[in-house]
Length: 177
Image (cartoon, rainbow, N blue to C red; front, top):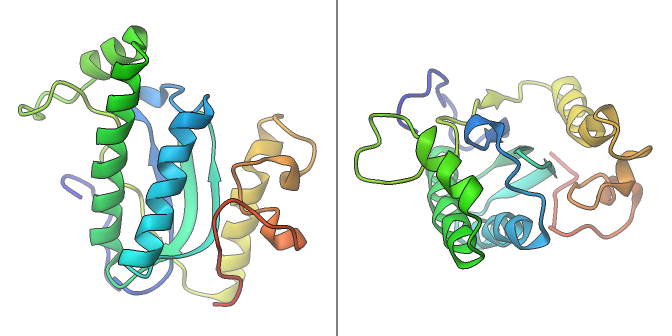
Protein backbone atom coordinates (compact mmCIF):
# COMPACT_ATOMS: atom_id res chain seq x y z
CA UNK A 1 0.00 0.00 0.00
CA UNK A 2 2.32 2.68 -1.17
CA UNK A 3 4.27 4.56 1.43
CA UNK A 4 3.22 2.64 4.53
CA UNK A 5 5.98 1.84 6.98
CA UNK A 6 4.04 -1.25 8.04
CA UNK A 7 4.87 -4.47 6.23
CA UNK A 8 2.95 -7.66 5.61
CA UNK A 9 5.25 -10.61 6.30
CA UNK A 10 2.66 -13.39 6.33
CA UNK A 11 -0.03 -12.43 3.77
CA UNK A 12 -2.47 -15.26 4.58
CA UNK A 13 -2.54 -14.79 8.37
CA UNK A 14 -4.98 -12.69 10.43
CA UNK A 15 -4.11 -9.03 10.94
CA UNK A 16 -5.51 -6.22 13.04
CA UNK A 17 -6.14 -3.43 10.53
CA UNK A 18 -7.11 0.22 10.88
CA UNK A 19 -8.27 2.45 8.03
CA UNK A 20 -8.70 6.17 8.65
CA UNK A 21 -10.46 8.73 6.52
CA UNK A 22 -8.13 11.50 5.41
CA UNK A 23 -7.71 14.11 8.15
CA UNK A 24 -10.23 12.17 10.29
CA UNK A 25 -13.14 13.65 8.33
CA UNK A 26 -16.57 12.26 9.41
CA UNK A 27 -17.42 10.38 6.23
CA UNK A 28 -19.44 7.53 7.78
CA UNK A 29 -22.25 9.48 9.39
CA UNK A 30 -24.87 8.29 6.89
CA UNK A 31 -26.10 4.79 6.17
CA UNK A 32 -25.32 5.08 2.44
CA UNK A 33 -21.61 5.64 3.02
CA UNK A 34 -21.36 2.81 5.56
CA UNK A 35 -23.22 0.51 3.15
CA UNK A 36 -20.40 1.02 0.63
CA UNK A 37 -17.90 -0.30 3.17
CA UNK A 38 -20.11 -3.23 4.15
CA UNK A 39 -20.87 -4.25 0.56
CA UNK A 40 -17.19 -4.05 -0.36
CA UNK A 41 -16.24 -6.29 2.55
CA UNK A 42 -18.94 -8.79 1.53
CA UNK A 43 -17.61 -8.78 -2.04
CA UNK A 44 -14.05 -9.40 -0.81
CA UNK A 45 -15.31 -12.26 1.35
CA UNK A 46 -16.36 -13.98 -1.86
CA UNK A 47 -13.59 -12.90 -4.22
CA UNK A 48 -10.53 -12.98 -1.95
CA UNK A 49 -11.80 -15.42 0.69
CA UNK A 50 -11.59 -12.54 3.16
CA UNK A 51 -12.29 -13.75 6.67
CA UNK A 52 -13.51 -11.14 9.11
CA UNK A 53 -13.10 -12.03 12.77
CA UNK A 54 -14.21 -8.63 14.06
CA UNK A 55 -14.94 -5.15 12.73
CA UNK A 56 -16.24 -1.76 13.74
CA UNK A 57 -17.06 1.21 11.54
CA UNK A 58 -17.06 4.62 13.22
CA UNK A 59 -17.64 8.07 11.71
CA UNK A 60 -14.07 8.56 10.47
CA UNK A 61 -12.26 5.23 10.70
CA UNK A 62 -12.69 1.51 10.94
CA UNK A 63 -10.92 -1.38 12.59
CA UNK A 64 -11.01 -5.05 11.73
CA UNK A 65 -9.28 -8.33 12.30
CA UNK A 66 -9.12 -9.97 8.90
CA UNK A 67 -7.23 -12.40 6.73
CA UNK A 68 -7.42 -13.40 3.10
CA UNK A 69 -5.41 -15.25 0.51
CA UNK A 70 -3.38 -12.02 0.16
CA UNK A 71 -4.34 -9.35 2.70
CA UNK A 72 -2.25 -6.68 1.00
CA UNK A 73 -4.12 -7.20 -2.29
CA UNK A 74 -7.47 -7.30 -0.50
CA UNK A 75 -6.82 -4.06 1.38
CA UNK A 76 -5.63 -2.30 -1.75
CA UNK A 77 -8.83 -3.36 -3.54
CA UNK A 78 -10.92 -2.35 -0.52
CA UNK A 79 -9.48 1.15 -0.29
CA UNK A 80 -9.48 1.81 -4.05
CA UNK A 81 -13.04 0.66 -4.58
CA UNK A 82 -14.52 2.31 -1.49
CA UNK A 83 -12.75 5.58 -2.33
CA UNK A 84 -14.23 5.59 -5.83
CA UNK A 85 -17.72 4.75 -4.59
CA UNK A 86 -17.62 7.18 -1.66
CA UNK A 87 -16.51 10.02 -3.94
CA UNK A 88 -19.32 9.14 -6.32
CA UNK A 89 -21.82 9.27 -3.46
CA UNK A 90 -20.47 12.61 -2.20
CA UNK A 91 -20.67 14.10 -5.69
CA UNK A 92 -24.18 12.74 -6.26
CA UNK A 93 -25.36 14.15 -2.93
CA UNK A 94 -23.43 17.40 -3.59
CA UNK A 95 -21.55 17.25 -0.26
CA UNK A 96 -19.29 20.11 -1.28
CA UNK A 97 -17.74 20.78 2.14
CA UNK A 98 -16.31 17.27 2.52
CA UNK A 99 -15.29 17.09 -1.14
CA UNK A 100 -13.42 20.38 -0.74
CA UNK A 101 -11.66 19.02 2.34
CA UNK A 102 -10.73 15.74 0.63
CA UNK A 103 -9.21 17.84 -2.14
CA UNK A 104 -7.47 20.31 0.19
CA UNK A 105 -5.87 17.66 2.46
CA UNK A 106 -4.88 15.36 -0.43
CA UNK A 107 -1.20 14.45 -0.33
CA UNK A 108 0.88 16.38 -2.87
CA UNK A 109 2.28 13.22 -4.51
CA UNK A 110 -1.25 12.14 -5.54
CA UNK A 111 -0.98 13.89 -8.89
CA UNK A 112 -3.51 11.86 -10.91
CA UNK A 113 -6.50 12.42 -8.63
CA UNK A 114 -8.36 15.46 -7.36
CA UNK A 115 -9.31 13.83 -4.05
CA UNK A 116 -7.92 11.47 -1.45
CA UNK A 117 -10.37 9.57 0.75
CA UNK A 118 -8.16 7.36 2.94
CA UNK A 119 -5.02 8.09 4.89
CA UNK A 120 -2.14 6.11 3.43
CA UNK A 121 -1.54 2.62 4.74
CA UNK A 122 -3.72 0.56 7.02
CA UNK A 123 -1.42 -0.22 9.95
CA UNK A 124 -1.49 -4.04 9.79
CA UNK A 125 -0.49 -5.85 12.96
CA UNK A 126 -0.02 -9.61 12.71
CA UNK A 127 -2.15 -11.55 15.20
CA UNK A 128 0.45 -13.73 16.90
CA UNK A 129 -1.53 -15.49 19.62
CA UNK A 130 -5.01 -16.27 20.92
CA UNK A 131 -4.51 -13.67 23.66
CA UNK A 132 -3.68 -10.99 21.07
CA UNK A 133 -6.72 -12.00 18.97
CA UNK A 134 -9.03 -11.69 21.98
CA UNK A 135 -7.45 -8.37 22.98
CA UNK A 136 -7.93 -6.89 19.50
CA UNK A 137 -11.52 -8.16 19.20
CA UNK A 138 -12.35 -6.59 22.58
CA UNK A 139 -10.64 -3.33 21.55
CA UNK A 140 -12.64 -3.24 18.30
CA UNK A 141 -15.97 -3.93 19.98
CA UNK A 142 -15.40 -1.47 22.82
CA UNK A 143 -14.36 1.42 20.56
CA UNK A 144 -17.90 2.92 20.35
CA UNK A 145 -18.38 2.37 24.10
CA UNK A 146 -15.10 4.13 24.90
CA UNK A 147 -16.18 7.08 22.73
CA UNK A 148 -19.49 7.28 24.60
CA UNK A 149 -21.66 6.46 21.59
CA UNK A 150 -23.33 3.44 23.23
CA UNK A 151 -23.41 1.88 26.69
CA UNK A 152 -22.89 -1.67 25.45
CA UNK A 153 -20.81 -2.80 22.48
CA UNK A 154 -23.62 -4.90 21.01
CA UNK A 155 -25.75 -1.76 20.60
CA UNK A 156 -23.41 -0.36 17.93
CA UNK A 157 -25.01 -1.35 14.63
CA UNK A 158 -21.82 -1.21 12.56
CA UNK A 159 -19.83 -3.74 14.53
CA UNK A 160 -19.42 -7.48 14.90
CA UNK A 161 -20.08 -7.25 18.66
CA UNK A 162 -23.61 -8.55 18.05
CA UNK A 163 -22.23 -11.68 16.43
CA UNK A 164 -20.26 -12.41 19.61
CA UNK A 165 -23.53 -12.12 21.57
CA UNK A 166 -25.18 -14.74 19.31
CA UNK A 167 -27.18 -12.17 17.36
CA UNK A 168 -27.01 -11.70 13.60
CA UNK A 169 -24.77 -8.85 12.52
CA UNK A 170 -24.52 -7.06 9.17
CA UNK A 171 -21.53 -9.01 7.83
CA UNK A 172 -20.73 -12.69 8.22
CA UNK A 173 -17.82 -13.18 10.57
CA UNK A 174 -15.58 -16.06 11.59
CA UNK A 175 -15.49 -16.86 15.28
CA UNK A 176 -12.98 -19.68 15.08
CA UNK A 177 -9.34 -18.93 14.29
